[in-house]
Image (cartoon, rainbow, N blue to C red; front, side, top):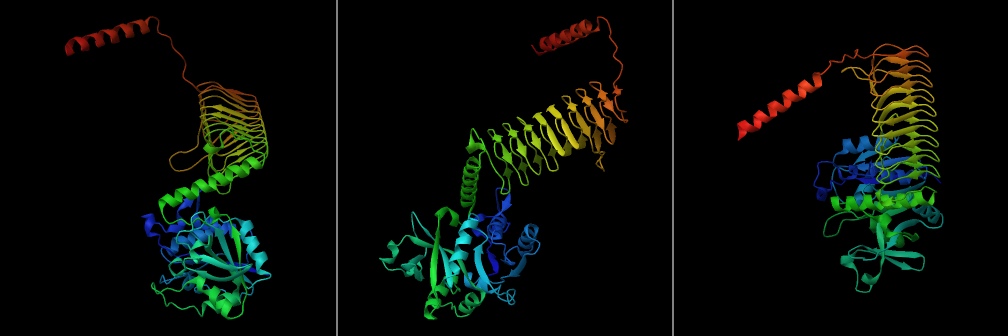
Length: 451
């Protein structure tokens, strides 16, 4: 059976106190909306429909940046969840399969939970996602008869007995396209808010002789984000889940509570991730690599047995091959570091290729930007770059070549050659003593004048 996702993302999110649409606020370096889409993507859906409203252009851009096939429909009036889902009816007019309704501000639902809903749909017409709440509060209650879902009762309409139920409604629903929109067409708005509620379809399904059931998940999966406080709570929940998963996958973290993952971080088995490491988007760390304390990585690839840090930054386009070492206070951007090469101390390597086993001395800088264009630096295999070398790109350093410490290199260096690009040293006998005597005398006079 084919699957379509309908993700509700039209809310303004007044409590966020922001000009940005609520679903575009981020956890783990991705918009809330993307987290919902990503969870649903595990089902390999045939269609992705995002219902947008406030900031629709921005929401559409974010949705299509994640999935270029995503379709965006508008809810021009905020008339309830049932009305929001109905906006997708026309877009799914030619679709025959199951529809799962998700929420763009509920980012923590696991793919396994959605798979369980699809499995339950095989024997039931409508499936609702529920959770056992530690504090049910004002959540809608799921009234069950065994495995059958009889109805969803809103707190304000519930009897005292029904309010003791702890099985609550998440709002996530799965049904066939035909059943979902057939029921929604019959939902009314005879309520205090004058809105069309998606939850009303359960009672309508029962009246039409259709079956309904509930699949349950952990309460944390249903966490909705409506404020900055809840956004921070969602970030904390995501990080706790990511850290636990990493530990279970065979990754060593001496202080896991200090490591921050992005939504798409990939780390191989037997890696060591030390304290206070931050991963931005699009990072892959292969097995056996070692990321030392206080590193920041984004848009990069680190191969097996490579070592990074401490206090290093890998920026987008950094490609580290096997056994590479990038050390203290180094930055690498848009550069390929070949196997066994070392960039150990206080260096910037940008828009460059560093050959196998090359050694980059402390304080080396690839001067890649002329104020208008970026230029490339090529460093050959087994080259030795002396400390405090300025490599003014575009420039090529040959295989087994060397640069003298303190050089400014502006021309290509042939294979095996030594480049010296510094001014000749001149020593002035006794001048240091004279200068110090002069400076000390000047300082003494300043103190006397101040008195």
